[in-house]
Image (cartoon, rainbow, N blue to C red):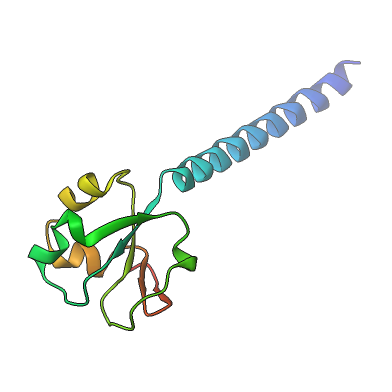
Length: 113
């Protein structure tokens, strides 16, 4: 019986540890995905002052259903900010929009840089 316990207890500890790590990793992924919002940029010109105007942005639910106007500036940008106002307030430079982790241009996605 003691030999069985010496084998079973370490094995059980390894299984519990692996399950815990897996659960924490997947929980972190889910929480990250739930906190992403998408904003569509309406003008066809790019400048910091236009980017910082809340009237030039609208929040969208599914970025893949939105069409871009054929410009070379991002028309869909992903952010963790939950409102247009907070998203626009988070923009400090043009690069904040143009090199965002998800920036859709003319129907294509720009990969994370």
